[in-house]
Amino acid sequence: MSTAKHVAIIMDGNGRWAKQRGLPRAMGHKRGVEAVRALVRAVARLDLDCLTLYAFSSENWKRPEDEVDDLMNLMRRFIKSDLPEFIANDVRLKIIGDWQGLAPDIVKMLEDALEQTAGGSRTLAVALNYGSQQEIARAAAKAAAIGDVTTASIAAHLDTNDLPQLDLLIRTSGEVRLSNFLLWQAAYAEMLFVDTLWPDFTPEHLEQALRDFAQRERRYGGR
Ligand code: IPE
Ligand code: IPE
Ligand code: MG
Image (cartoon, rainbow, N blue to C red; front, side, top):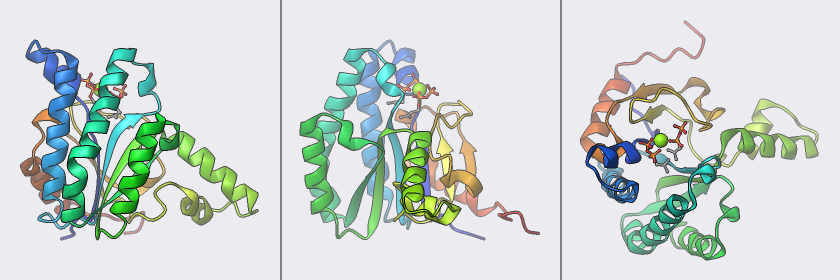
């Protein structure tokens, strides 16, 4: 039986959650943040070394401006309200994606948060303005610049270079696609697609996912 140490989640379904209730999409995103908070609180109890969450993709800029604004404002509020808890709970914040391309005040908040949580022993990695193909292209360009285009060198230049191997990738909301998330890192990850909409996803759902993972046999091409 194996245990998952690094779990990544495509947090999808906020909009449909709100729609089902006749609420504005913004409410779905707000409840989605609460689901994130509950999960981060469970990281130590579930003994995860790393939890990676897909919060905003490089393609999400295509959404209407007011929805993008709502998401950015939620991000601002979340960092401000939850940073003390990260520090208290020994959680190291890590950001993957082109986060330097976000609004300057968010970049500043993130830089402060990264610095203040640098000593944490468990990692919460948040994918912001993240696109996996872009990440791979950036890493390949760096590998080429040093004349070492090998899988090891590309991996060493990915945003995730200091994270453990990805064990389990979960997507909520019933969609069965990766939407440009961790394409390289998922090469041998186990995958789990659940129908639960993100705001309804609880630590108990994650526990169930970890039990499911424990039953899987990973072969990495061997036998
Ligand atoms: C996930 O929920 C949140 C983000 C992508 C930022 P969605 O907003 O994609 O919700 P659905 O897929 O429309 O239900
Ligand atoms: C993926 O969800 C991105 C995040 C969860 C942040 P989307 O809702 O953007 O993906 P598609 O458009 O359904 O593929
Ligand atoms: Mg979606």
